[in-house]
Image (cartoon, rainbow, N blue to C red; front, top):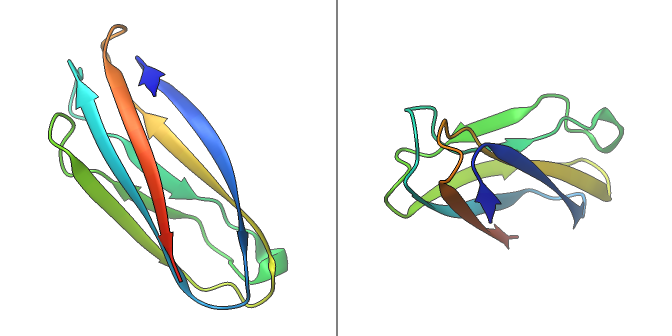
Length: 100
């Protein structure tokens, strides 16, 4: 849970195979139209050469945001969960789900 604008970083161990990262997000009193984001950080050492950014379709409704990642070697991925709310009192909740 984030209050106002903010960011949380998670580290996810991965194998050398494709998988999907999904984030369920829901906000209360969200300010602005820059909706919550999930960014999967590029890690060339495990074969992920580019950043993957996905943005929720809305802020106040529960939405699921998904990215498909295919590392070429075992390692750790960094995922940023970001609230870009302009309201300092809003809350944004994130639940992360992965599927192999």
